[in-house]
Length: 192
Image 1 (cartoon, rainbow, N blue to C red):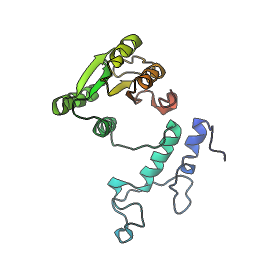
Image 2 (cartoon, rainbow, N blue to C red; image 1 turned 180 degrees about the horizontal axis):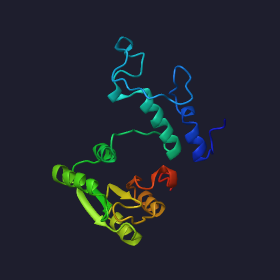
Image 3 (cartoon, rainbow, N blue to C red; image 1 turned 90 degrees about the vertical axis):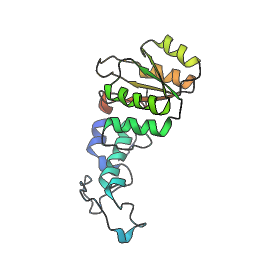
Image 4 (tube, rainbow, N blue to C red; image 1 turned 180 degrees about the vertical axis):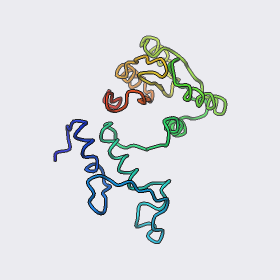
């Protein structure tokens, strides 16, 4: 099967065909490994030792999601806010500025409030549907990241990801898109 240009439905039906993880018994779909630990005598040979740091089920799912989302890789977290926290921990430094829409998920806002207090992160709130205002704020050159949702939660406001992406690229700003509500089935931020 040629794996390029497949429809989402075909990819989802053949998830086990993507990535490097294969079931050792040839199952058509990756079984769910529920074990917490693996054979520690083979540590170094076996890529898995403790489920929290990786297991075949999770790696297979990460490979599949990378394919359907058009990404180079995926890191699964237990919750969406866990993914947002991982993003912040990976990218933000003391005193950085984040551009964020006023209509942002409350959990994200509470997490950002913690970063504001702990790391002096500057939260710049705006209406991300107002592209002129966004460009004006980006021209200053002090925005490290734009964090957006589309649709927003809870207001369901639609923000033009492609337009914001072009602005972020123009000004060298990182763009992070929370795609929780739309999901990869109906919206692909990486393509936009």
